[in-house]
Length: 372
Image 1: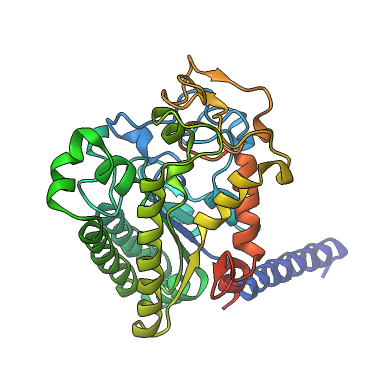
Image 2: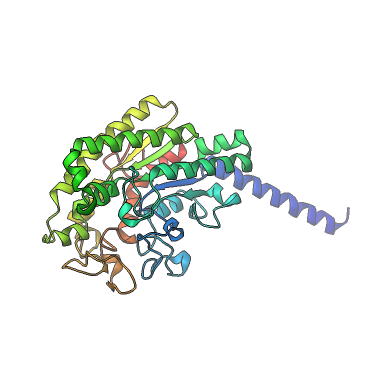
């Protein structure tokens, strides 16, 4: 063997070994796919492909999203969503691609897929004011398509292991069922007359149980479910109800808390009844309320005024778009627009979900969930 051939052989062995150890390390650390479901809090661009009134692929949305060079991607914030940040921190090399995007094919789906849709909810009627949106039933239907694709990519046995052991299912949904269904004056007067809050929340919980169980039957085992945040405190609600900056809409927050209590019971029930599954509850309500009430402690200057928006004392009526007024200190606003947190808020929330204690994330945090 010549010296040149020997050197080439040694080089190849080193490459193969490095590749093996990289793959082994990835397997050991539990890295796999991030499957994201929900609404505009975590939509990464699915609504770009719908004829809908709920869109975020217009500037200045995405102005701080480095991966796109500051161009809008369909995310309803100035930078990364909580789902993006969590995925990065857990070792995902790429953001989960929107299911409807052309690049959500082939091996790209092994990093995860994002099914979330602005305006979507647990109930199918939710968000119809936007004309089109993808509700949870359809999002789960879409995952069933992805599930079959992963079987073809990995083979059935490896696919089942990959989904159950190395993938996290993140679901952020429920706020629209109140904001753009039960509490929406145009559409919900009849529903509110005929349906009590208890009955409406019963419907939500019963539908959600079926949706989560469907995912379980497709081998999902590691779940993180966000409860509904303090929707009575968002700039939109404060503005239309002409509140001062320290006030929130009681009815909206009471509905959120009522639903959250039922959601906690539902996840305990599923943890007991679905063998091998871990349902983690993300206490988004208390996390966001902490930022709203103690914003100055976290370096914010306001938790009432939207950075991007127009109308009223908190720029809370007209959604963020090219004609909106935009603040210059985006990292000092809790809210990016009338509805959604800024990237600065998302970073603080994500950090608590990743490494926080049981006050905010239970029974385990997301790093612990990944490594189960």
